Image (cartoon, rainbow, N blue to C red; front, side, top):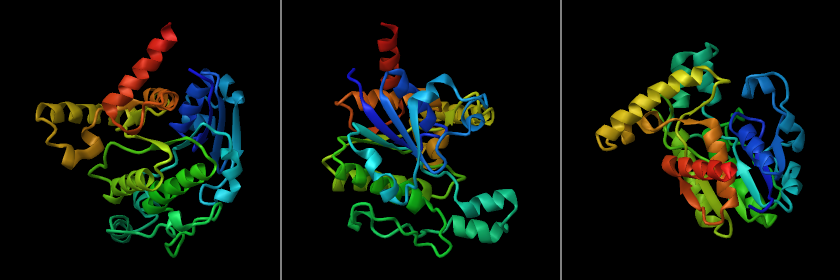
Length: 288
């Protein structure tokens, strides 16, 4: 596989850091973009010490809502990855942590719609996104949808051929519906409005890893739900979403993302079975 240059927005996160690791392992040039730069390693690995491979990544600081801070970093890239969506909004987190009343927090969290930004496709190159919520909250509309569309557009401006969006297999009963609808809106808009990009939409279910022990319990529950759903012919998918999708180790998804970037034949939606197939393909190559 030819050497690539990739930019991972959210490369200091749980999945993003693993994508960087896999790409470095292939000898690719890797740049991570995030607000804080290098990861807090204890948050994404089992050790507080930076791993050896991390010295091969260019850990850059930039604001995804302000393309002028990162657009020059996209030049000459073969692929750009968006791995910066949010699972919970601030008011939902506020309820869980006791900082906001249950009624007020959940009423806002589960509202039918919230503001995102101005129409990303009507921006000028490098123009910032302007949050539409009065308190500037980072909503699903802003982070899962508008920031992804904007990053894809900025990648297109820089003639980047491939764009990867880390989406999701589905929502979950405990999450607002807007979590998954905004991701699907991002996929649809990027595919239709930016056809010059080879867009890849990765749709995993629950991700787990030993560095986050709590994810093992959640993965077991999702795995059980997935088996039951399989027995009933997938009839629980509409209700359970990602909660009845086969969980995947984060490293598997990272391998699949990098393999997809390197394979020009991969395009569009990549679901759980294809994620596993891509990861297996990568591992077979590594055994040769």
